Amino acid sequence: MNTLRKLQDTHELHDVSDGSIRDAFIKALSEKARPLFEEAASYARNHDLDVVVDLVLENDKPRLILAVSRPDEGIVSSYSLVANTVAQRMLHEEYYADSGDIHRQESLLASVNEKVIDTRLANFFRKGFALPLDYINERHPIGFW
Image: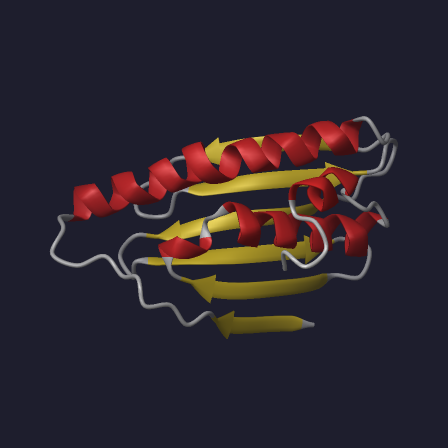
């Protein structure tokens, strides 16, 4: 199943240069999202999954990728944040190798925040690997969501 939804947000980048926009997206990926990806990767590794986190800076589409597989299996599922600096949008993309499902959600840069990323990582690991990210419950107690 392939889904594409747009988050509604009132925070947009206005009156800034293309270089500044690109820098803002790269900063969000590297300083906000990457530490959360690395934390989830470490947790998953401690639960016997193979995980790689990679930040790819490429023209107008920098991206952060979390690639996950079970040991000794050749299939890799992934959760990626792909910045489209031209459109000033961020694409959250989850790929589930077991089923072939791809879920995409397009949003503004403001979606790169702890609450959104933690929620998406928790859903990704739960759906793709039946692994609850228990530390997220500690950071966001019941009632926080």
